[in-house]
Amino acid sequence: MLSVRLPESDLRRFKSVAATRGVSLQEAVHEALEFWAAQIPNPGLEPLDRLQASLADVDVEQLMLDDRSAELAHDAALLENPRER
Image (cartoon, rainbow, N blue to C red; front, side, top):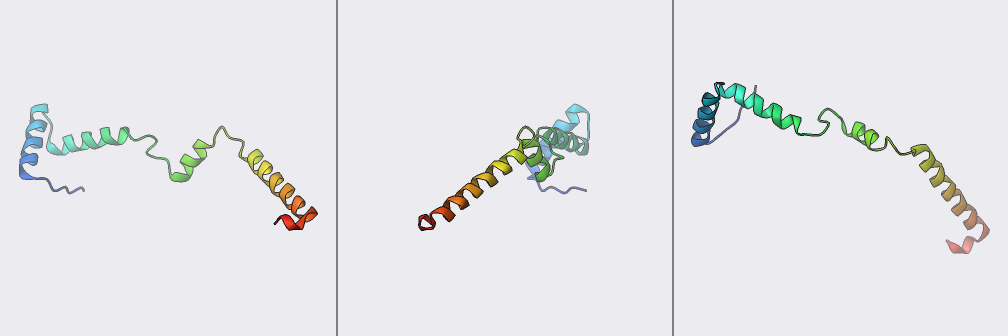
């Protein structure tokens, strides 16, 4: 069930447009919402699914290994010269 408050003038206009198309106001609203929902890219994807999809062409494991290697190199440099902290 959906409840929407509209100004009386808009309600009359929408009912009239629906009637000229040969559908009820309920059917017109349903069609409008279906059309609107179809315009949203990947409406069924949850945020994590969208993140996974955006990383599909990225070698995440390699990025993590590179990042870890950089951290280890930085730590080794600090051990060699502790005054650079």
